[in-house]
Amino acid sequence: MSTGHKKTMNNRTEQPIDAQAFADNLARATDIWQRIAQAAMANHVNNPATLGHSDPMSMAESAIHVMKNVTIDPDRMVQSQMALMNDHLKLWGWWTNKLLGKEQAPFVEAAARDKRFADATWTSSAVYDFIKQQYLVNARWLQDMVSNVDGLDDHERQKLGFFTRQFIDAVSPSNFALTNPEVMKTMLETNGESLVAGLSNMLADMEKNGGKFSISMTDETKFKLGENIATTPGKVVYENDLMQLIQYAPITEQVYKTPLLLIPAWINKYYIFDLTGERSFIHWLTEKGYTVFVVSWVNPDEKLGRKNFEDYLQEGPLAALDVIEDICGVKQTAIIGYCLGGTLSSIALSYLKSIKEDKRVASITYLTTLVDFAEAGEISVFIDDTQLEALENRMSERGFLDASEMATTFNMLRANDLIWSFVINNYLLGKQPFPFDLLYWNSDSTRMPATMHAFYLRNMYQKNLLIKPNGISLLNTPINLTKITTPSYILATKEDHIAPWMSAYIATQTYDGEVVFTLADSGHIAGVVNPPKKKKYCYWVNNKLPPKAEDWFKTAKEHPGSWWEHWHQWQSKRAGTKVAARKRLGNTRYKPLEPAPGRYAKVKG
Image 1 (tube, one colour):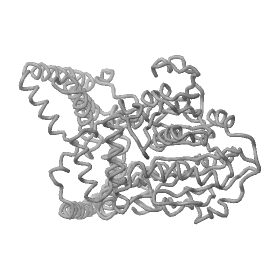
Image 2: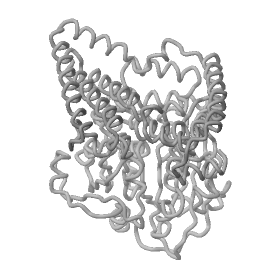
Image 3: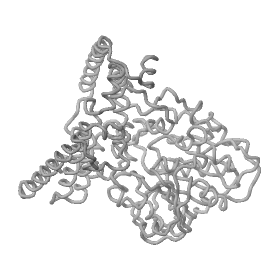
Image 4: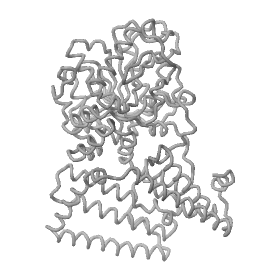
């Protein structure tokens, strides 16, 4: 995109269309579109879809159930069609009044947080308002019809509802150039240059990553690990097949005696804890006087495909505890586990309790963690025998789950925010993605070893065995979370679409020791990465822990700002006395191997 084009798009002025420039840009756009079609065809030839891949969610089964239901009860379909027709007749009357200049409230109100129709033209223009209202009427009808289908079990209903929402989101008029007023206005103001830029962005996304199509969420060229992201000074002091252990340099002259071990999920890289500037949780921890270690998981390839859940337990938290105790000369370490890293941490604690070594963990913090997967949110739509068998077959071919598949799954849970908003910005408006550290991290996914991932999905998501005492055994030891007595701080986030907060709350009724539950505003990532200086969002606390999450929230007290300081007040009381800062990283036995962030974090998925 030329400098002049950027200036034109960022400083819009009312200018007449340059017919010649517009024609030239249409010709350029046509040429780029042909290259896109060729790239798509080449990708299809090189990676042909098989029958097992063509319906990964086995939606055909649910669709057949719907058609059977319609056949059995045609009266319901007729009533539904009549209701839709009636709504459209009312909409036509509403629109007629609007054309006559009468003040009209929206026929159907879009959701308060729906950003798709934020442009004022969606309301000021009668034509675009009608397009929007027609879409919202049809979307409401389709959702109502699907929700009232009989003959489906709970999982099929949830899956069908999810698929229906994906379809509704995909066909939004905001996703198409001719029915998006902002896109049309930009195209005219730039004499079609925005169209050329958008198609160029699409072609670039198709050609990157070896032909795997991936929408750019951020300007990845603006970030480099160790230079402007993941920059907190530290050293890799230990590594094995599955992880590198990083120790960070102290900032304060004295530190708490009890070191901290951060265990992230192995679905993404560890540096969610070490984003840019004040958004780095690790840097903030060192400022508060903690000795910080973090597990940096490997990005596994086919050679590690047979690594199982026991390997992750043994070579992850258990190995890390051994190293930390040796380096720091202590008998206790505090753990912070994030998402799947928190699930693994709870298992590690149960194992240590069974072998009477749980005192090695002074306290544990669970960030957006599930241990009861009965109500795991919409991600459950991907968990049934048909889909798991298909997934296991795909993983067995390569020895791992490709990082892009996992990323797509999570992005689909929030398609408007994580898919369609970027389609509009990058391809329809022709803008370059904004450089954003959190989105850069989100795009830096990792692969999953086949054996480990199959065990995790089958035993936790599908069978929900972890919450059952002795439901699973690892390292020849039954896992029983109800025996855990370690002081626990549980953080959930109110809008979490991966670990729903009410499901995370169940852990308060599971562990046997002291438990504190805090609910942060926002979602799975933004609610956790919320530095105090931002003075953003809020959090709720309640010392009482009734059996039901709803009852906890009714009497919870809201506090402005970040949960970080609240956690620090809790953790500092369980971190021991202050000692001289551990300025030497590693020791004679565990000598530093390389500077943080380490090479494991730099391997792309």
